[in-house]
Each structure stands twice: as structure tokens, then as C-alpha cells.
Length: 402
Image (cartoon, one colour):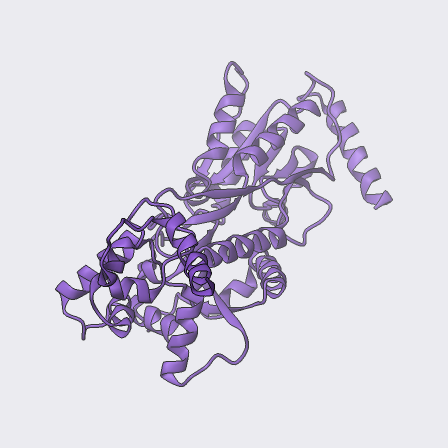
């Protein structure tokens, strides 16, 4: 009776998973392993794959790591068995085992990389937005039990193949891809080895999951708020490369706002990321916008040319630079953006989601409108010098209060 009860306890879960047919030979157990698409009460193991493929566990381990010692035909048979059984390697466990085999264990915990670009290793630290992103990554990485390290992927002396080897040798399987340098849009790595998340839209190929500022929402907020404050001649200066990285969000919002407006100021696209001051100055003199909307602050350049632009135009930013206060525009919390990237990367790693996504996802962070330095204009009176004087008086009063 005791033996019978014991057999009942063991066969119960197996029967629920895949009932044994009557008269099944003892050696036929592999036929009862769950096939592709069939529900299983527990995940398949490497031993299950070995039995299903008729090889050793060590052969399975080597084949799933594409070891050249396993013949191509055998490797394909093992991989097919793994797919049929729904078996996947755990990237974190694989990294630890690889480190043990190489006798170079990690110093502390699990490491993920923040890939940086630019013309030198510390270039990203000169960009306040990326510094804020880094702080957010660090905070969330520690909360998840990971350690984040910056790795300069823009080093011209290191090929992409070598970069791939460095990452794998260090057991790094999680990547956050920062903003690529101007003129770059592709990053070639052996992506099947990594979980990866991009920040922003500078990388075009391959298509990764990414976190980004909600540019369309932010640009719309700028126009809606300026319009509500009475500004009608809204001029926009937009570098082509930034417009492209925003997927034409600013162009689309401007075009929608300008429909039916006979006095709409033409949008100015500049070739350089930091804008061409000569083009901007000529455009400003030609069209005299009530407010200039841009990514860059051209007011100092105007002052150098002997023009106090604030006597003629207000200024607002499509993205207020990190750390800058007292200006109007949309402010994005870049530390939160970096934290969002880390949270999503950890979720991919825990879910074994290595390789390129079949359908890339994008997580958007909305910005917040700031009207600092602006005052409402009387509707319909934008060329009236008295109105300009009133606005300048408002600026001076605001500056005195601050």
C-alpha cells in the first residue's frame, strides 16, 4: 500500500501534464515530454533537452552556446529540441557560469553597461541630460541589485567585434544604449547575446525597445500654451538632425498649428545640431516673430551682434536644458528617463528576453510646461510698440521678483 501510494503521488503531476498511455514501455519516457504548444506544469530543463535530443547534458550546454566542438547537424538537432520543449537559457546564470569557467568572477553583483559615444570616454559627462540619465540609472540599478558601468562604445580603436568580446568576457548581458554621436545611426553587435534598451531615437538600426521623451506631446504643449497666452507669430528654429530624431514631431505640430494662418512664420530648419546663427539672425530679422521656439538659446549670440532680442521677441524651448531655470518651455526629467530605461532593462533580463525584439516597444516620458520668463500678450496687437513696452516691463518686474 505504501508503494502504491508513492507511485500515485509521483504519477499524478505527470498524468496531469501528459497522461501515460496504457502499456507504455519503461524506456519510452522521452515520448512523454511536452511538445511545442502543450501546457507543462514545470519548465523544461537542460536534462530534458538532452534526453529528447539523445545527447549528453554537456553537449546541450555547448550547442546552446554555439561551441564549434559540436557538429552543425547535432547543434541544429539540439536547438530544435530546445525550441520544441520551450527551453531557454537564463542569461544571468549563463553569465555567472561563463565567469567561473574563465576564472574571472565579477567583483560585485550583476553588471549592466551604459554604452556611451562621442569623441572621448568622458564626452557624455559634458552633456547635462546624459549625466542626469546616469544618476537615474544608478539609483534604479542599485534598487534591483545590479551595478551599472559606463562603457565607451565610440572608441575608434575598438571594432564592434572587439566590443562584443569585451562585453561577453565581462559577463555583461544587459545594455542601455545612450545617444549616438552626430552622423551615426547604426550599432552592430551580436544582439542575440544581450538584453538591450535604447534611450531616445538616435539609433535607427537595429530597432530596440527604447524610452524617450514624449516629443509630440511636449511640442503640442508649447504651441497650445503660447497660443493661450496670446502669441500668434510663433517662430520655430529646428536643426534637421534633431527633427529627424524626434520623428518630425515638431514639424508636424507646427504644420498643424499654421493651417489657415496667413501670418504664420515659416519654420527654419538648420543644418547643424547647434544651429547656424547667421541663418537664424537673417530669419529673425525677416519675419520678426513674437516668440522664438527652439532647442538652443540664441539670445547671447544676438547680444554679441548688438541686438537685444528680448525687446522684440519672447523665447521658449522645446526642451529646457537640464539644470537651467527661469526660462519657458517643456522640462523633461532626465533622471526619471534613465531610471525608466533601467527598470525596463531589468524586466527584459529577468524574462530572458535576449536578442532583437520582434515588435519593438517605446515607453514615453511626458514633460511639464513652464511659463517662467513669459507674460501673456494682448490678442491681436503684436506689432504695437506700446504692447512691446508693456511686455518688457513685465520681464523687468519678473526679474526683480526673482
